[in-house]
Every structure is written in structure tokens, then in C-alpha cells.
Length: 180
Image (cartoon, rainbow, N blue to C red; front, side, top):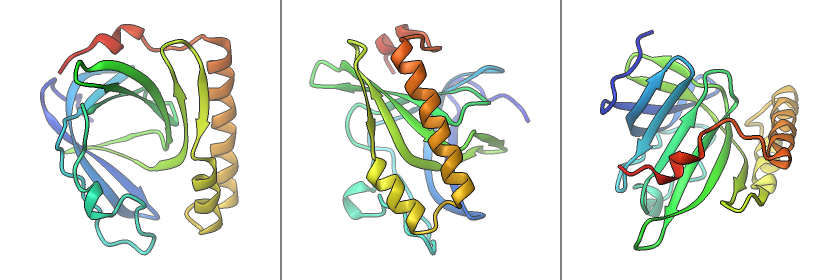
């Protein structure tokens, strides 16, 4: 599959049980063999096709991306992305958000993945926290994931915890200064 061109708009698509669960246009910042960086622009329209397992964001107030947007860093083998957020009128770097998800698969118009609900935040000072464990466990109980998938996601979370505890992250912290 081809590499995407910087500036190109590609779709980040979540696929659950073989059916599209959500779609989000993103703008390619970097696409090279070891890194796909895409940006979700403020005001980006988010869509949630009909699905037997409704997306938790499928609400009128969540139809568009709010805030400063987010930069998402993906490595092909990782079962998570590193998302960067900014805050305030001065667009100050807020935090890294490690979003557990299926490793991405390239398709002609973008890439496919599936959010796994379990997440971690990493503040600029190095403190970190697990997020959304209750939501993840509710999704496991509702049948979004099989028992094997849930165990694999938990194992990925433990790997991330070890990385964050050691302070040895793989991404360049200069991304925090990136501007669209």
C-alpha cells in the first residue's frame, strides 16, 4: 500500500465486528515506514454509521472535534497511538494521550483501527495515569471484545505502564511544539 502525501486528507476508520463503527477525516503530517502522524483539525466532522453496538460518542454534541485539534502518532506495530493535546487561548501543550487501539491497517483512502477504550495520559512533568478502565470493562461485558481480545488489551496496557514508569518513551518530545 502506498505512503500518504503530507497535507493529504485520509480517513481514520474504526471497524468493529467487520462493520464501520466511526469515521474521522485526518490530515497527513508525516508518513514514512516507521511513523504515520495525522492531525484532526478543529471542527472536523465525526460520523458514526448505524451499528449493533452503538459508538459511545454518537451524540449530537460529539459530532465535531472541539478544541485545538489533536496530533496522532502511530507506529505500524503498536496497539496504541500517541495523541497530543493543547489547551488554552495560547495553545499550550497539555498532555500526551496513549490511546489503546488495534494496530492500524492501511486502506486506499486512509487507515482502519478500533479504539480499545483503555487509555493513559502522560503530563509534561512525566506523571501518568490510567484512564477509562471502567468504560473498557463495561465494553468487555457488553461483548465488544472477546475474552482473548480483552486479555491482549490488558497486556498492552501493562507494557505501556512499564514504558511510562521507566520514562523511556519512543516519540520525539519536540512534537509538543508542533503547530498546524
